[in-house]
Length: 385
Image 1 (cartoon, one colour):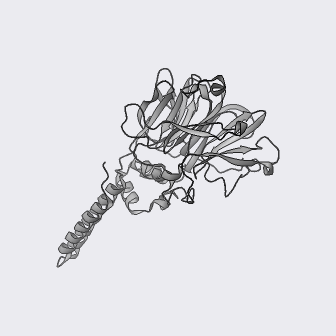
Image 2 (tube, one colour):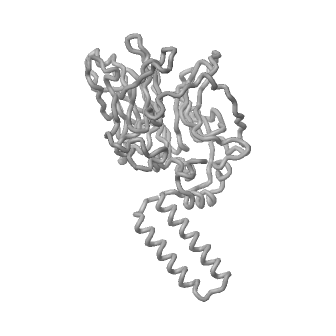
């Protein structure tokens, strides 16, 4: 739905209000309630048009689930999880681990537009961990990272907001890499509101500053730039598979995408020879992505579901029908959090959706109620659910 300026909609709403006021004069109570209901409905329509939201009944691959999953609270992570960089490492989204000259490093994408390198992760004492900025994907503004999950300062478009990260060999992604030294370099591929970035010299080798370059701003055949690139996974052939969570809503308004329920997400593939191609359209909020243990499929987070995309047959199937929450990142692992060896996947949940109640589940097949909810409830309040 095309967005029109807020002033036009306010004007339209004012006209509705004035017409309703004229009819209320001299009418009975029943007529007043009818006019009030009509004016309220018009206001909801007005508000939804301004927000660009048009809720529909939600659908899930394999059919909607009737019962909510159960998520029991536990203390399995007590004593083995420690907070790092509180107050400075703001809103870390994606983490990748690299090793250089015998030292292990963690790279993290932050909400203020920074990509940082953390050292000391392989040491016993967490207090010895230290970090430094590798590079910024956007500008350095004093409000960067200050807007919270809803980006109330509206600075992500200025500061950047790196989401997905991948640590790869430069020869697999950079068509400009010519020398043997360049081709062997570890580089970061970062997904941001501004596009697909290539970041070189990430270990500050020989005191040369890291550099960034945009590999792609839109998919082949598209006239508009990417909207919300989210996660990235490289396969053995060097291809980068990328999720675009929404082609309509930015990250700062991602809950509107959830309640709108239109599947506008996509699965993309980047190669250094062909750029970015669209593999799948009409996905509901694809987010995290990882390579299966047999390396034949991709596991893709899609709302409450995990989907499996076969790299050869290109078939899309349900891997997990309903998780106890909306999925975010996912990693292929060979052990449980306890350390026990087991091939598995670690999936992070952005919000809980489990028994006995989940707002998203309750409203899933009720687009009218979601319309009222989105139009009347402030966005920050929606984040609490």
